[in-house]
Length: 347
Ligand SMILES: NC(=O)c1ccc[n+]([C@@H]2O[C@H](COP(=O)([O-])OP(=O)(O)OC[C@H]3O[C@@H](n4cnc5c(N)ncnc54)[C@H](O)[C@@H]3O)[C@@H](O)[C@H]2O)c1
Image (cartoon, rainbow, N blue to C red; front, side, top):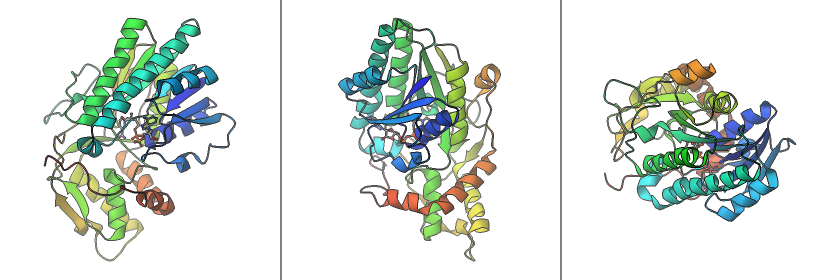
């Protein structure tokens, strides 16, 4: 298999690339290397003969055609996206350009390639999406493959639009597409603007640990390597034109998540006073989803996938990784425009 991965220098993409190479797949990573990318995420595979990298922007249709011609992939795993909700509130335009138009370009390049190869039934176009396309849950219920779409932020609306395009290319042109909608990921190489890294980094720096609103919002968290494993399971085992909701069965309130991380830091890097004393409540994100939760029974029943770690085990690994890899996150924080509070415009 030659797997074309888009966004492979990002958080989840790099986990997927490392996992695919570990399983002997040939991987072509197409990434524009935006602010969110970090080539160091791939230092363990960059010299592997199975790995190649193409710096290209999915907004550039001609560049994508060249990649398909040069590498003739047998499958695509599409992760390249603008992914930060807060950034989408401040600047939605690039979210539409990359997430919607970029996905359209990639679908067209894949379709042209697939037709040129005689429409192989084994070809797969796996689109990696988010549970945020489903909006916000009340106190009960879970998102599943049949949940209606109800996105509430520019980010989730752009991802919803891209999901619709993918399904339409499957229905209209017969392109063998797959779609996954996953809950919040966490783990090593998580970009330092996202909640869990912010908590760890601010705690270590002796700064306030910001929690949006009251901290009552509930998320279902999935360890990133388990997500990569799920994506490869879908690619390998699913029939075409199928979708899967993926989650860790780990619902937790933000405030409780933050307190757990503080307790892990109290054990691993004690300072004499509890890190939880640094928690500070800040103005909420506009359109903040109250609760998200995933029913992952389809992927479990059909493909035998389930998460390998509990939330506590995954958080323990994550906290330890951030303690051991200070150079990695300090280099990213030193980049222009990274690390300031974003997405408060309508608050
Ligand atoms: N992070 C999560 O919790 C989560 C959960 C579910 C689904 N997802 C989805 O998974 C995918 C990856 O998320 P992530 O958190 O790893 O994102 P990320 O922001 O860490 O990485 C995105 C990658 O895409 C690249 N990219 C961005 N715009 C590009 C463009 N125009 N052309 C080519 N490359 C471009 C960036 O350089 C970066 O390497 C996204 O599609 C996201 O919607 C993320």
